[in-house]
Structure formats: structure tokens, C-alpha cells
Amino acid sequence: MDPSSRPKLFDFHGVSMTNIFTDNWENIQNFQARPDDILIATYPKAGTTWISQILDMLYFGQESPERLTSLPIYERVPFLEMTIPNLVSGKDQADNLPTTPRLIKTHFPVQFVPKSFWEQNCRIIYVARNAKDNLVSFYHFARMNKAQPEAGDWNSFFQRFLEGKMVFGSWYEHVNGWWKKKQTYSKIHYMLYENMIEDTGREIDKLCNFIGLSPSAEVKEMVRSGVQFDNMKKNKMANYSTLPIMDFKVSPFMRKGKVGDWKNYFTVAQNEAFDEDYKRKMKDSPLQFRFEF
Ligand code: A3P
Image (cartoon, rainbow, N blue to C red; front, side, top):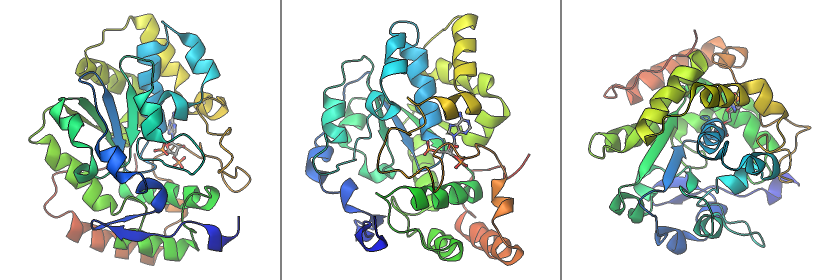
């Protein structure tokens, strides 16, 4: 695909978006959530696939293990706002999910979430990742994913991240907007990617507590080991290798799965500029991220 055919960013209700996430806007806004639906919400590249695989294994790993080996993650956990011409939309996929609960993914900033999720009092799992690693991961994703606007070189991508000119807008507004919502809507479980890396088992326990599941030690261990980075990287039903819009020769989807990879990309000058800008944008935020261990 030549760069000129990549989608273009435009301002949509104050958020940078591309048409594949806005074309079906009315229908998506009218999505009918059910009380037992689980919404997985993230800024892109914060660990969406990881948490999706965890939840799918927790709910269905015992009851219908064939799901996990026969259906790619993007069919088991539809991407609500994704609308690619000639392909079934994420909204239609979600409407027709046969499972209970339905696991549904969104990258929407909180103000774009269809109102039925709030009305039905659905459980929502939000995962946030430190901005520096999130940015590096997004850069590689934009390079390899033909449905993303052209990434450009590292320096220009870096600048655009600071300006919030990414698909789904500003990282700062996303993580803070969802955090703010959690203060008034109790059914948001706010997770950090770095905590998952530090102790996946502990975070799975907290997640189970939130969703009201009490898996046996054996099931928990099956999930914990099934979602280890190396296992997910080689799992064709979790690693996106079946999706033709992604060019794995440019970068794999499961790239490094680490905290602190940003140090391999940020120059000293970029790091100083980033930190200064970060301090300003996050000065009123109680969110604390770890950038390394
Ligand atoms: P990197 O590009 O830094 O490797 P998303 O699913 O939201 O698109 O996020 C993708 C990022 O999560 C990628 O980060 C990917 O490698 C990482 N990831 C996916 N599964 C993981 C796992 N099991 N453990 C750690 N990181 C994982």
C-alpha cells in the first residue's frame, strides 16, 4: 500500500480519528449493551490483546477451549468501532456474539462510549500503559498496520504524539478521562500494563475479584502461563498474524512486551522535551506510571 492510500487523520468532536472508526458512528452510538457485557477499553497499544486473551481464557477456557484455538482474538473480542468496507463491522460482530458475557473492545475516549454501556451498568476494564512505551509501541504499529495513517519518521511521530495527533487522540486525555470517569462510575477496573508485567498472577486475581469469578488454582495457572508474552507471540489466534492489513515484515504485532523499551528510541533531547511536556499535562493527574523497573 503506498503512503497516499493510508487513511488520513481528521478532527472528530475534538479527537483525532480516521474514517474506519467514525463511518458507522450513529449505529455504534445506538449499540445496545447488555448488563453482563464486559467492555475492554484502552488507548491503542496499552495491552488490549493481552487483557482480552486473559478474559477470554478465564470465561471460556474451560467450557469451550476450541474457541481459543480456532478463532482469532479479533473475532472472540470484537472491536466495536472498527468499520472496514466489505468486512463485517465490529458493531455487527458484537451484536451477534454467541457468548455470555460478551467481551467487547474499544479504543474510544470515554466521552465516545455508547450510552447503553452506562445505562446497563456494564463492567468496564480499562488498561493504561506508561506514555513513553505506549508511544514506541504505537510507532511500530503505525508502520506495520495499513489501516493506520502513515507513521512518518520516528521524530515526526514523536512530535505528533505530544500534540495528540494520533488515532483516538491524546494519550493524556484518554488515560485521564477514563480515570475521572472511574470516580463517578464504580464499575471501572483501572489496570496498569506495568503492574501486569510485574506480577501477572496478582493482577489476574484482582481482575477475577472485579468480575466475580473464582477460578481454581489450576485454571488460574493455565491462564497465567497461556498469556505469557512468548506464548501469545507464537499463538496464531492471539498474535494477529492472520490479519492481512498488518505487515509482519515491517514489525510483529507482539513486538517486545517490555517496560522501558522507550530508552532504545528516545534521544536525550527528546526525553527532556517529553518530561517537561508530561509534567505540564499531568500536573493535576493522580495517575502514577512506572517507566522502568
Ligand atoms: P510492544 O509493541 O511494546 O511489544 P495492544 O494489544 O493494545 O495493541 O498492545 C500491544 C502491546 O502489548 C505490544 O507492545 C505487545 O507486545 C504487548 N503485549 C501483548 N501481549 C502481551 C503479553 N502477553 N505480555 C506483555 N506484553 C504484551
